[in-house]
Length: 140
Image 1 (cartoon, rainbow, N blue to C red):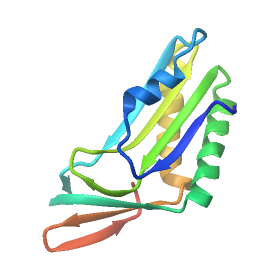
Image 2: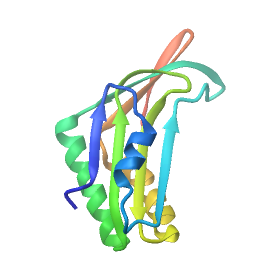
Image 3: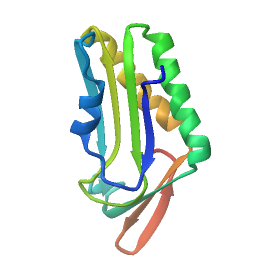
């Protein structure tokens, strides 16, 4: 659907702005996943994360994900996938995925599928930085 929202940005993500864009009279449910930078990883205190993306590949894959969601859950109205790049401090929003549909059950299932699929196919990389070291992680 042309009204899906896919973006990679180095600007802070405002969840309410994304959710408000998916609200429409036919929608009875909107579910949102918000991924934030957590402090602990592998028993190390994370100082910040650094995300990199390849937008020329990532954006088409994100659009493909939206189409997959709609194919699997036909009552889905719209999907939004917005991922942040750059240096993100602990507590900052890294990714937002929002799904709207006529009924609630579809949005929960679709949302779960979308976040797992994002990790599988979208070329976005995460580097964890902690005191004394850093490591590129394969899972976002």
